[in-house]
Length: 257
Image 1 (cartoon, rainbow, N blue to C red):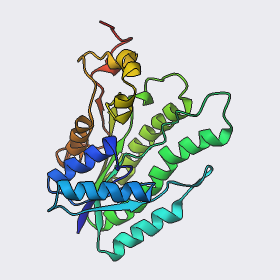
Image 2: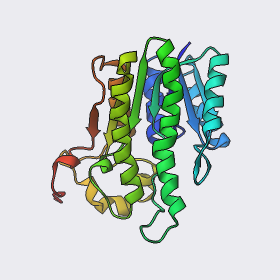
Image 3: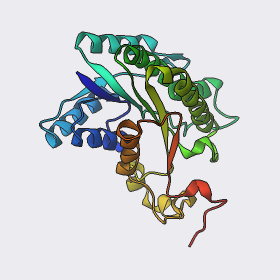
Image 4: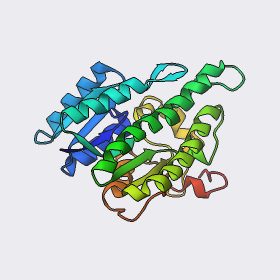
């Protein structure tokens, strides 16, 4: 049976992606790091979409700060094989935001942690998915990246580096896996109205990123729609980027009205 796998999808943007695909009739497996959160999210999705097939899976990206949890990924895909589950679309949403990794202050292992989570773990997931997609006539891989891959922000060197590297990896995968009818693309959000927005209204009222050419900031469903486009409507598109940031990437500096 075909499924979409969405990583990091208990809350916020990941949850919006899960709900988009469920609303369109897709079967979805989603991951999270906390078993309690995964179970709670699965319960919520089931209530909203009682006729849909949705499963949660608890998995941690890292074995420790310096090592990717490859065994957990292998075991997860072997479990899918035993359950006759084929991941036709892999959506790589989970990320380490690197907000606590201060340049020149943190130990090197914190920088490594961000790179391992956002690049190496995603490659590990993709590698395991591609091996199955090759045997099943093709598939889809979609990175939920960031406009910070091109536009750096203060105090986030590790995050920007990981997202820039992720795009290079995406293009390389698109080139190498295209012959297997596997498409690999990336959605680049800017600022998104997540729970952090709701909890810190004073900060987000004045943060420069909110002053977009369109005058608004994306919500989770905007990102989900872009992901859906790559998954279902971009038959002849691979190695591409779709930016969803209200136009922030086109301006030299925000025009604060």
